[in-house]
Image 1 (cartoon, helix red, strand yellow):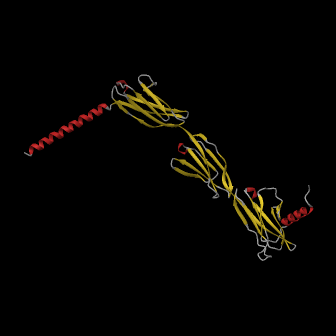
Image 2 (cartoon, one colour):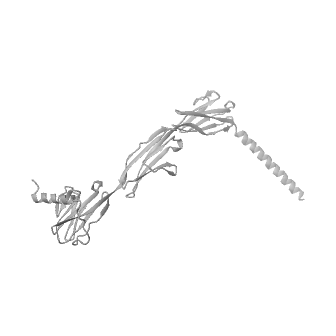
Image 3 (cartoon, helix red, strand yellow):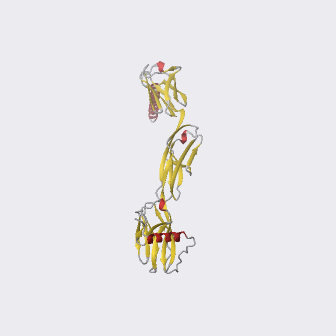
Amino acid sequence: MGIAPWRWLFALGLRLLFLVPAGVPVRSGDAGFSKAMDNVTVRQGHSAILRCAVDSRVTRVAWLNRSTILYTGNDKWSIDPRVVLVANTKSQYSIEIQNVNIYDDGSYTCSVQTDNQAKTSRVHLIVLVPPKILNISSDVTVNEGSTVDLQCLAIGRPEPTVTWKHLSGKTHRVVSDDEYLEITRISKEQSGEYECSAANDVSMPDVRRVKVTVNYPPYISDTRNTGASVGQKGTLFCSALAVPFAEFQWYKEDTRLANGLDGVRIENKDHISVLTFFNVSEKDYGNYTCVASNKLGNSNASVILYAGPGAVHNRSSSASAALTATCLWFSILYSLTKF
């Protein structure tokens, strides 16, 4: 069924009216017809009410979005179910746009026919959009000294501010105020999580994280020389920091030690290696070499198993006993001199 002729002519007239650049804006003194609001600001997902003040002399009214007719009087022209008429009285002609989105943003026109004269008033709908991160770099693994490029692309209205932070322990240090973050010649200290935050004050910031893993060769961070008495248990300790974790080997002079042979056990866990002697003999004393290696390199350190601590402990006990005897002797002499 075609559109009724009067509706078609009315629609054409409204479109022509809307497109005329010289349309006279309504002044406060014009027949009680007040100027519509300059703008309406609403957050995405909320409802916006566009109000147009009229008087009893008005014969026809309509709301348009750009050149599209939304309502004429009580008749709905828009096929969008979110657009509804909320007031058509002698003093107000208003529509509501429910669940607004960014595509609703723009200029709306209230067109009024009065005394055979058409007048228009415009409302600008501003839709605020919370920040949202659309694209962010994936977790990345690189070798120390490489260049790392991270990106965090976000949208929102107003345009969100993007900030990168390096999360290191309890420290959250800002490293970039841009969507893009470039780290040249990255070091192992720069590994960890990087947080991207997009904010525009419309709502809470949108936050995402990227993990940066930096591979680096081992360096031995700690060793412990150990004393053990013959027949007792002795333990040597070696710690090496590396990514990926280092593999450990133990040597005495040029001989590599094997786990479970000659009364020794080698236990490796993460960055620590422990060499245990279950029954220390004289031949076990001496210098040992701990070697830590991964695909990027290796490091080594000397660790000593020496005689003790039993002998040292015994010498300390003898010295203590001698000191006690000396103190007792001086105490006896002092008592005798008083008589």
